[in-house]
Length: 399
Image 1: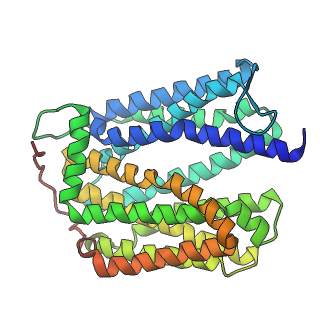
Image 2 (image 1 turned 60 degrees about the vertical axis):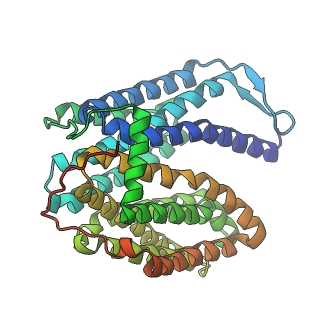
């Protein structure tokens, strides 16, 4: 089989794999907060994570025992997909959906474990450890894929899911929802969450900011491999791994670093400032031609999303009533997720039109300009902050 054809086939396989989970994940994000605000969050997390474990085991079984019957699909001449790959698509979608459903329930559980003054430190530590574990897991999967069968690589996420389940079973904290209103239909409650977000202008502005920045970041970051090859002139895959690892390490440290910024009273202004720095870092990518300069830039860039996430999580936990918190988190999930695939697609078109350097300069410059726009126009976000020792009174939902 010609190398070019094989590359095209693999690219199509990956595209179909992404599409298989895109719409289910978006739907799951829409309803995830309503579920977290409706059911006991401890039981919900255990049930969702158990489903992740089952799906992971079935993926491993499919790789080993799945039928190899070939199914021709539209695409280049000779393109086919083994039947076991077809079975893989819904299983992979299940894993991604359960991860999406898990996050709002988990994020709303943090205030039950720590005081408001410790939200920043707790969120930074939790997600810093998660990012570091992701980095180690990614490296482990890469090593296992190179040395053994793919089924052994599935053991890495299985171990992580199993460890999560064990930890959840050991948690002895009341994670039931504090509500002033009786539960309604999941769809009604999901819609009520978006209505609440619309009334909280500062949270709406923060969600809009995440939507736009994630889109602009996706324009550039989807082209990392091409950036290394065509702009820096590096074809060895080890450099791709080094750059991704550096980005992830920066993000892990950014989660923890944010808790030392004393951001509580000026959370919105910190988000705007860090957004601007993120744009400057993307601009810097397009101005250097050495990997030894690109790597420290990648680390600095990685710090920014980690810091913004810690500030965002802590601020929502401190300022949103418990009965609405899951839905605010899920609204951010919907907003953050919705335009990322579009940004990835647009990134490819932008590279065709402007080249790799033009793509990074355009994306970085657009983020810097958007940060300046937020300084001028996002007044509610600029004023966003909270007293670490204040408690939020539960608010009744609109009828």
